[in-house]
Length: 71
Image (cartoon, rainbow, N blue to C red; front, side):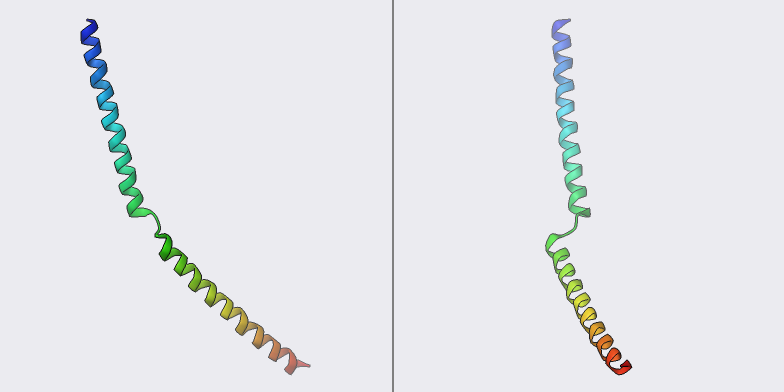
């Protein structure tokens, strides 16, 4: 009975290790598919910042001209 219990315990431990490895592999695969590419994301952010600053600059120039024309 003791040897039978030991064998079952070993099989359960092996199955737990296999399950842990599969779970880790699955989460890694999911991460590769869904995570954002940092370089691409930073480039997009930089481009949007430049466009935003250009829009602010253009709006400031238009507002300044209209205020001068108003006075």
